[in-house]
Amino acid sequence: MKKYFYALLILALGVTACQDEPKKQQESQQETTTETKDSLQVLHGEYIYVDSAAVLKGRSFVYGVKLDSMARALGEQVDSLKRDPYDMVPVFIKGIVKKNESQEGWEEIVEIKEILRVMEPQSDPAIRIEGKEI
Image 1 (cartoon, rainbow, N blue to C red):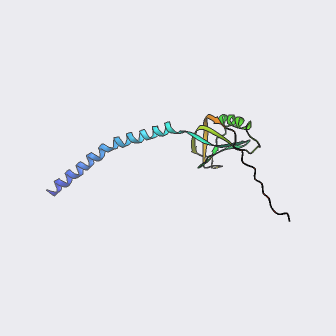
Image 2 (cartoon, rainbow, N blue to C red):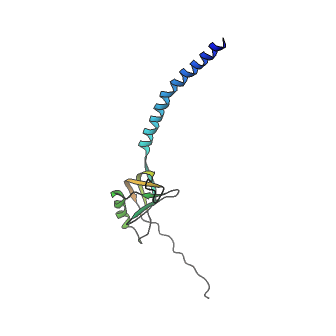
Image 3 (spheres, one colour):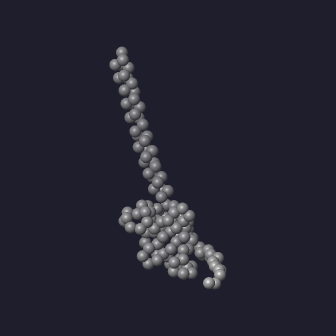
């Protein structure tokens, strides 16, 4: 009697376990398609572009920028607003953030897909230090 009970229990577990597999596969496929659709992000940060590198720095992130035609186009727009060669200019872009495969530079890089807005840099108040003359 116990043998039949255990056999039925194992059979029932086997049947229910096999029924979950297609659902899990469908869910994982849906998750990957959602990630591909949502991989384009709107990013806001300060952009700096020099001859050999570009960086986008936000409040909670710092990304290297893939140097392609879009990065150069944004660099040209930013150049007209810079006060000095190393000035960072606020920008809004759409891009794809991915791991840096080259092992050089930043851990993550952003590939710019669309330039949404370029703003003038905020002017910092001048810092003046007064002290005693020695």
